[in-house]
Image (cartoon, rainbow, N blue to C red):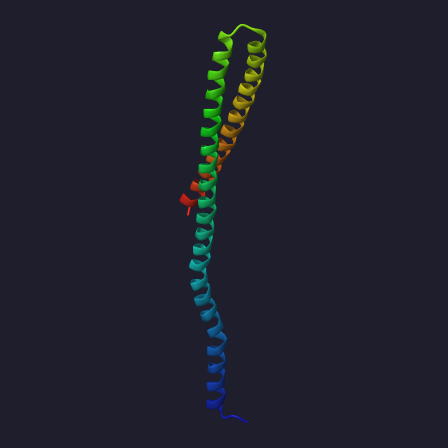
Length: 129
């Protein structure tokens, strides 16, 4: 059907077509690799920004709770100087408030330490790239 030269040309043509998909697949993979890395970096950056904003909110909450604890300590000190029955009940209430404030402060500081640990993990993951 085909001459010998025609068959030879057809075989070469088929080989070149079969080689093209591997070249284009290699090029496609080469273009997709940086895109994937860029996508991962953007996602990490977004997570980091969210974590930092949450950390700032925690810091503000800790400042508020510390101020509350200080105010309660001042009120307790003032109530200690009064020795009547009403002052003693007030002192007990203030001491309970102070205990609550100290516990809340310790809990918030524990949360903040957890955020710092997560930030350290994220920083380590980003520097490994």
